[in-house]
Image (cartoon, rainbow, N blue to C red; front, side, top):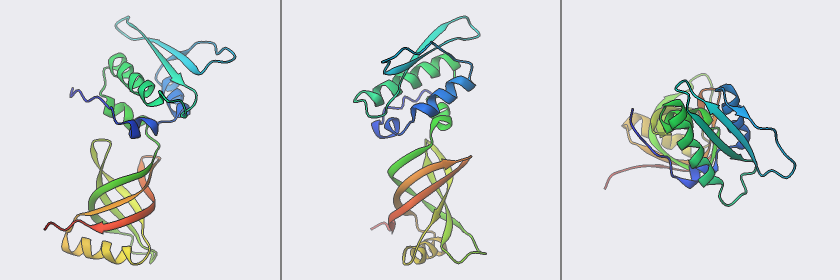
Length: 179
C-alpha cells in the first residue's frame, strides 16, 4: 500500500462532519453518547486485530483547528482500516469550492446544444471524468482544445454526485499552450 498523507488544508476544510459521521456509521464505528455542549462527536472502533481506535469529529467546519482534526481522522482511519488516506478521502469527498482543474477535453454531449462536455482531470490523486457545462465563448475554446488536443485549465466548484464529478460555476477556462 502506498502511504500518502493528506495535509492540504483546503481539501481537509471541504470535508463535512455529517459526511464523516455517515462514513463512520457505515464502516462499523460506534458513537459515544453525546453530551450537551460537546464540540465534537466521539467515535471508537475495535478492528479485526483487536486494536482500539478513537476519533473526535468536530461538529462545525468553522473551528480553527478543523483541518487538523480532519487530518487526524484520516490518519486514524488509515491505521484502523488498513487503507490509504486517498481511498478513504474518495469516499468522504463531496464538494470543493473554488478549485482549479487541469485536464483534457474528451467528449461533448452531442444531443444537447448547451455546451455540456466531459474532461479528464486529476481529482483526489486519480485521473477522473469531470462533467462541465460551459457557456460561450468558453465552449468554443473547449471545442478547439478537443480538436487540437490542447490541455485546458478551469476553476469552479467541484462536487461529487453519486460517483460522478461535476464542475459547477466554471470560470477562467483557458487553453494551456506551452510557450
